Image (cartoon, rainbow, N blue to C red; front, side, top):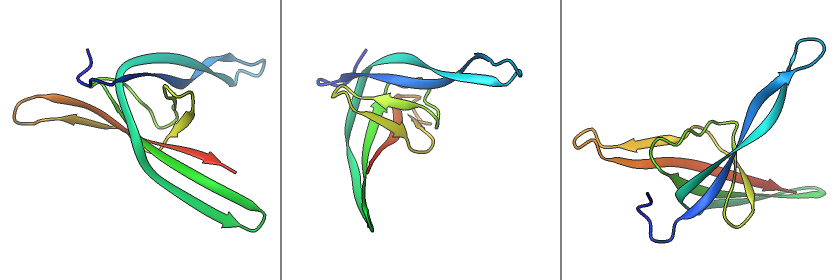
Length: 113
């Protein structure tokens, strides 16, 4: 259920162990988890000019339904098709007074250049 009139569906791209190689080392792949009832909005943007390269870091904030598990190594594809990295640890918002569970706040970033 979504509490937002204009919610979006996002894809969590989760890094997961998908097997082992001939030496017994973990092999990683990506699994996709679809999450409905989300909202995202702009956070920050930083431009770094370093000699030859022009790097832009675009930030967004994602609000997902409470209980959505988001890890620092996940990536998120928003409804507009752009993929962002999770920036830090997700915050789980709940009231200690009423028990109301508002959602999960996730900082996202996309680096280009």
